[in-house]
Amino acid sequence: MASLLARFAISLAVLLGGPIVPAIAAADEPAASEKPPAPPKGSGPSTMPYKPGDPIPKGYHVGPLGNPTFFVAGVVALPNLYVGSIVGAVKDESARAAFIPVFGPFIVGATHPPLTSSGKGIGPVNVLYIADGAAQAVSLIMLILSIELKEDALIRTDLYPPGKEPLVRREPRGSVAVGPGSIELSVRF
Image 1 (cartoon, helix red, strand yellow):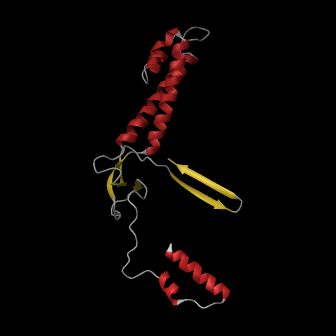
Image 2 (tube, helix red, strand yellow):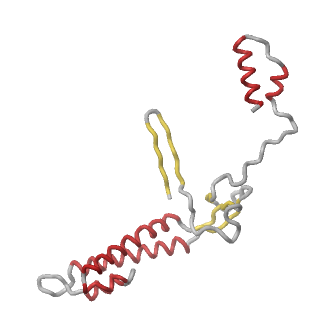
Image 3 (cartoon, rainbow, N blue to C red):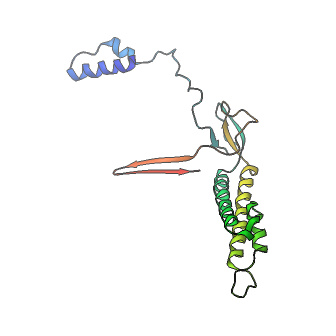
């Protein structure tokens, strides 16, 4: 605050054409014994990318993190696809096995009576259930891989002590660009 007042007084004296008081000018300069303040505890991102050989910043440690892209895709897709199976199971008596996540749609696709004009072969409902089962299986695999395939990252020690790292990176990475007449915001998970 004193530095701000000293700058204001100097600016005002120069603007009015008056003499600059040496004491005010000296107050603007920090004393040689003063050290810059340490950054506050808890500042900085909770996780950062890490490449072997890079220096490790103070307050961080190297730890494993899962893939956030697979995690978000699996968490979003699996419940939504399962709700589709539940709706089919509620509406169709012969599709009750679809209540079983991932495996149920395959069972229904193999056992559901075909709805073709001849009554033989595989009908569109069977194909729909098999595709739903395949999509649920892929979603579950993405969710498992996001947790199992870990990569090294820099993790803030005050938030996550060694051995208690989060499963995946929790904060989105984004950027804001401001230009003449435009603002752009992009976020990656």
